[in-house]
Every structure is written in structure tokens, then in C-alpha cells.
Image 1 (tube, rainbow, N blue to C red):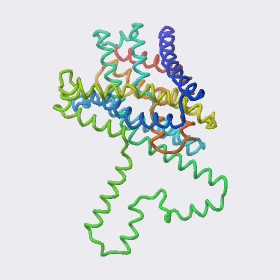
Image 2 (tube, one colour; image 1 turned 180 degrees about the vertical axis):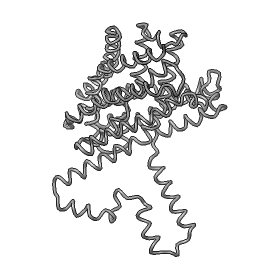
Image 3 (spheres, rainbow, N blue to C red; image 1 turned 60 degrees about the vertical axis):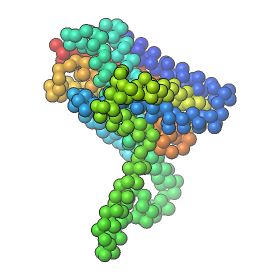
Image 4 (spheres, rainbow, N blue to C red; image 1 turned 30 degrees about the vertical axis):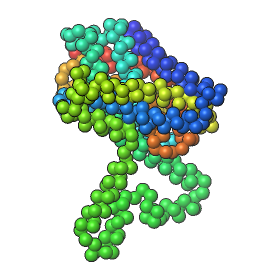
Length: 404
């Protein structure tokens, strides 16, 4: 057991250290004027609008098919379930304990790709995965585990870019309202008594209801057009380049002819178009970490509350692991008795916030101060990431015992 703990701790520490080193390179480059403010903005823009959509396209597309989504239904349903629980925990911290709004997104969206893959490969090298092979070869178990991780990442990535910017915006708005209430009570009280006039926090259907009551002669077709336009505007506002990249990948992956054309080894477009997109996507991760390091230097005044960090780490490394282990233990009888699937289900929701959270914050347009806070939060998250060894060892023990 101690050997497992040591190996997983080393693997997690190596993953964290590589992230922190790239952050340091970005910090020093900004510190010594190798990157200008405009260059920093351009790198962020390119990452969000070009490289990240390309990365999601080539990560998601090969893993998607109707049959695979049906076969891997525990992951497809389990990921949103744990994201909902994490959101509830983040909302409690924000609403009742006065923590910053970004804690909701940070609690929900964890690292679901690079860190789990690195941990899995490290465990394979030490022979720890043999009991999870289920009677087959370790190499087959490793390939299956990677497939499980990527399907879990597929669901998380789509949810992250569909709802992440809205979570960040909502949290920032509530933070601003809280600050305004703290600074001047009476004026804010007056504003709170008249929410219908400015429309904040109200849907278009609420605003239009009075006009419907006052003007009974409005044609039904006109109302339908207005409602349709409202829905269209909301959908349009929720769309962003990474989400579009992910949805296009899902569509192509679910159409067998297109899946073969783009993602099969013998597909006509795979050697050219798909590989070129894959090369673009490969630039994202290092560029994003490098830019984050640059922002740590350029936005040094943006502090992160210690209490919020402790609460976030408790969610990501204690509460969620306990819940995921408990859920797998009691519910594993409802799906196939695959020890590797149980292991990935247990560790999938666990770990530090995703690096791509920085891109989510940028897309939400909340400003430089909030970007700086999130950059610092991510840095601290990867400093403490080696503590993930505890939940990983517990998940290994659970999966092995259930596989007997």
C-alpha cells in the first residue's frame, strides 16, 4: 500500500511540477519584457479562438460514436451528476460564506485529461494496474482506461464551455452587487426594490408578460416569432469557439461516414486536414500555461482569499473523492463489472481545477483583475496536487476488491 501511495504521489508531483515550470517560464518572460501586454492579449486570444477549438475537435471526435456513448453510459451520466454536486458545494461557499464567484466554476471543472492520463501511465509502469486488467493483459487495460478517461473528458469539456462562461459571469455580477451593498446600503436597497425596471436577473418572457396583458390583440404568430428570437439570442450568446469545436466533433463523430472520413486511419481527410488541426490543438496546453504565468506577473495585485482556496481544495481533494468512492461502491452493480471502469469513475471527478478554466474566464469577459485571481488560484491548485495520491490509492483498493 505504501508503495502505491509513493508512486502516485511522485506521478502527481511530476505532473504538477511540469505545469509550475511552464508557469515560471511565462512569468519570467513577462518580467524581463520578452512578452508585451499586447503580446499577452494576442496569445490569449489565439489560444481561446484557434488552438483550443482545434484541440477539442481532435480530442473529442475520435472518441465519439453512438455505440460508444451507449456502452460508456456510466461515464456519460456520471460526469454531469458529479458536476452538479460540485456546483452545489461551490454555490454554498459563494452564497453563504461570501467566497468569490469564480469558486463555483473552479469547484465544477477539474482536470479530466492530462493529469488522469499521466497517473494511469505511471501506475502501469509500476505494475499497479495488473489487478485492474480483469484477467486480460495490462496493455489492454491501459488502453481501455485511456478510452474511459477521454470519454469522461468529452462530457466535461462540452459542459465546461457550454456553462462555464455563464457561471463566471453570474459569480462576478453577484460579487459586484455584494460589494455595492457593502459600500452604500440605502442606494442599493432602492435598486433592489425596482428589479423589473432594469431587467437584471429577469427573463425576456417575464418582461414581455405585461405587454401581453396590456395588448390582447397581439397576433399569436408575432408572439411565436418574438419567443423564437429570444431563444435564438440566448443560444447565440452561449456559443463560443471551444464549444463550437466540441459540438462539431460530436456531430462528425456520431455520423459513421464522416467519422471514417475524418478520424479513421484510412480516412481520406485524416492524414491532411485532421492532422493539421491536431497540430494546432497541440499548441494550446503549453501556450495556455505560459500565458497564465505571464498574467501572474502582469496582474500581481489580484490576491486570492486563503479561506476560498482551503474550501476549494477541500471540495476537490476530500469531499468529491469521498462521494465518488461511495457512489461507485453502492452503484457498481448497475453496470459492467470492469475494475478499470470503476477506477476511472472513482477518480474522474477528482483533482485540481482545469487549466482551461483560464480560457473560460477570458471568454466571460470579467476583466483583468478576475483573470489574475484565477491564475493564482490555478497556481496554488497545482502546488497541492500531489495530495491526490490519497484518493487514487483508495480508488485502486476499491476497484480491486470489487473486481475479485
